[in-house]
Length: 107
Image (cartoon, rainbow, N blue to C red):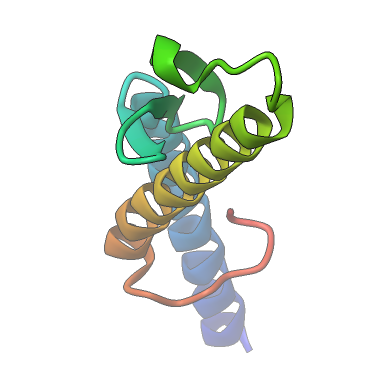
C-alpha cells in the first residue's frame, strides 16, 4: 500500500515541477514578440507571448476615410494572426516540457 502512495506522491511532485517550468516559460514568453501582417505588409501587429497586443503599425496608404471597413479588416486579420502565432509559440514551448501530453490544469 505504501508503494502506491509513494508512486502517487512522485506523480504529484512531477506535475508540480512541470507546472513551475510552464510558469517560467510563460513568464519568459512575455518578453518575446511575434509579428504578423496583412494587406501585403501594410498593417503589422505585434503580440507578446501573453497574447497581448504590444504594437501596431499601419501604413498611411491604407488609411482611406471613404473605406474605414477595409482598414478594420486589415487590422483584425493582422492581430488575429499574430495572436494565433503567439499561442502556437507558447504551445510549442510547453510541449517541450510536457512531452506533448495535454495535462488539464497545467496550461
